[in-house]
Amino acid sequence: MGRCTVKIRCLCCNRPGLHMARGLIVSCYARHQRAGTLDQYPLSEPDGSPWRPTGRIGTGTLNRYIAMEVRGFSPARIRFELGLSSRQVNRYAKAAREQRLAAAG
Ligand SMILES: [Zn+2]
Image 1 (cartoon, rainbow, N blue to C red):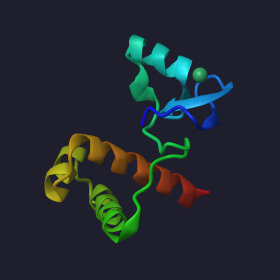
Image 2: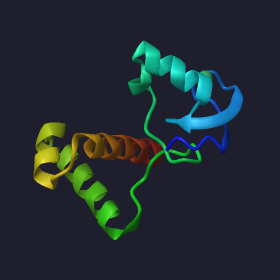
Image 3: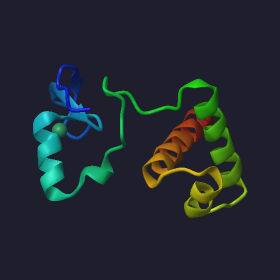
């Protein structure tokens, strides 16, 4: 992250600009970082698209995450069971939510 070469529309203000991270343009990222509000914006790929697991292991982990979530496991428990870092578990939580939304239409 941090190479500002991809043009996006900013998630917070819809203005075009160079992508910094989390779907935000450089000036907005700096503003949210100062304000401590970066958590409102999901981690994203360098091109601004939402993070998704790639490959068999990542997809398998996402499927296990979803299966455990459906059974009512807390994020802390899922994190422990799957051996994820807190940052990873947040990514899987968001990917799982997006998959649910996509499935719901
Ligand atoms: Zn913005």
